[in-house]
Image 1 (tube, rainbow, N blue to C red):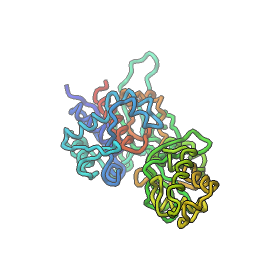
Image 2 (image 1 turned 60 degrees about the vertical axis):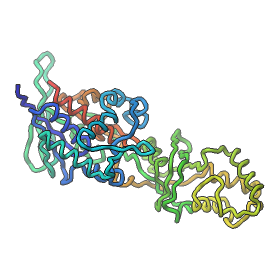
Image 3 (image 1 turned 45 degrees about the vertical axis):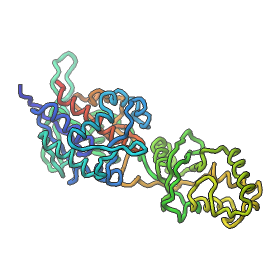
Image 4 (image 1 turned 90 degrees about the horizontal axis):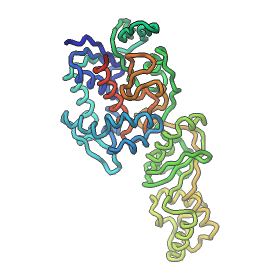
Length: 420
C-alpha cells in the first residue's frame, strides 16, 4: 500500500540530514523534504574538528558514553542502546567512508577531510529521494488541534509558513535547527506548547589577562587539573595557552559542565590550575628540595624538573619572584614554597569567553521531560519530533555532540517512517 506520508525536516545540519535519510530509507514511499534556511547545508560539519570533522568517539559502552553529556545523559542512555558510536561507524563504512580512531578516542574520516562526511550525507540523502531545499526557512507552524476527550483521534497535520511567503503541509515534522539564541526551532517548539530551557554557550575558551600567559601562546601542557574555586567544577586533561587566555580539553570540559554557572557569573570568575597533578604540595616540595641539593649550581631557567614547557616554566618562576638565571642553591625554603604554589594552585582571573573555533555549542533547548527518547516525539504535540541541539542536550568536546545528533536523528527519522 502506498504511503501518502509527508515528512518535513527543518534544519540542514547533521541531525536533520541523518533523520531525513533514515526516514526516507525506512519508508521509500514517504515524501521527505528537508528545509535549510541558509545556502550552505551541513556548514557545521564542514568546519568541525579543524576541517577534519570529529564524527564520533570510540566509546562503545552506553553507560560510559552518557558520562560525557553535562545535560541529557540520563535521557540518552536508552537512546544509545538503540544507536551508538559503533552503529555510526558501521553506517558510514557501509557508504564507503572509513573512520579512524586517534589516541584520545576521537574518530575522524581517514581522509582527514570534513568534506568526506558532508558529501556522504548529501549523497545518501539524494539516493534516498530526500528533497533538499536551501535558502528556505520556516516562519511559523500551526498544528491540528488536539481532539476532544472521547472523540476519534485525527492523524497529526502541520501547516508551515515559509520564509518565501509560501506554505507547506506535512504529517510529520522534525525540528533540527540547533539551539542557539534566535533558533527558529525553539520559537516554533514554544509556539506548539513546549517549554524551553534558556540557551547559554557551552564549550568555550577563557579570556585571561595575566602576565603568566602573555607572549607564550601555543604552549601546551599535557596534563593539568582545572577548577573554579567555590564550586564543584573540576576537570583534567591538556591545556593550551592562547593569545587571549586558555583553551584545550581541560578548559572546554570545564566550560561545558559549568555552562550555566559561569553564565550566571557573566564569565568573570577565578580559575584554578594545577600544572603538576602528579604531585601533592608536600611531595612537590620534597622533589624540588632534592633538585636543589643535586643541582646546586644549575640555573633555574635552563631546565624544568617536572617537565613543563620551558616558556611556561620561566613565566611561573617569574611569578614566584625567582629569576630564571638564579641557581638552585640560592632558592630559600620560603621561595620554594611560593614556586610550588604557582605549580599546584595557580589562580587566574577570567574576564570573558570566546567560542571554541567555529564549533558553536549551546546548552539549553526543548525541555527533555517533554520528549519521548525512544522516538524523539513530542509528548505534547503528536507528530512533532526533535533531534540534535534544539534539545537541551550537549556533550563535552571529542565527537560527543555529533554522536547525539546521529542518535537522535536516526531515532526520529525511523519513528517518523514507522508511526501510524
